[in-house]
Length: 108
Image (cartoon, rainbow, N blue to C red):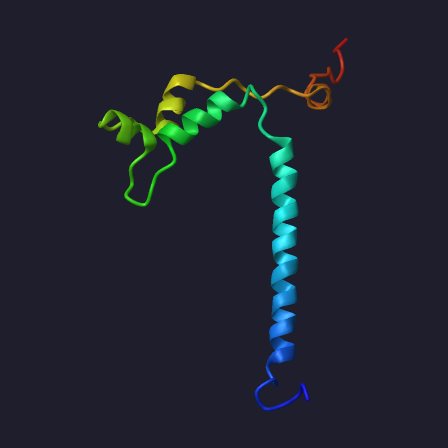
């Protein structure tokens, strides 16, 4: 007999195993989807800089700090200093037409 005192937890454990296998399969399929897509070649230099100078281990060090043995400036602050002022946003045609001055009337 399958339903004894020892085997009462069997249906629960089977459902847990089924759920775990479904999660693993979905995780595997998701990983395969992203692995096939890969990275674009023009994104790799930026991703390399982020990896080397911004991502930190649990001890708070970056790959570049461990390699060169010295501190580097904060990557985000450095990029902001290099960029300078941002240009003003482009004025759309719709808002440009709405702001066009018009003459109310010409005095005679």
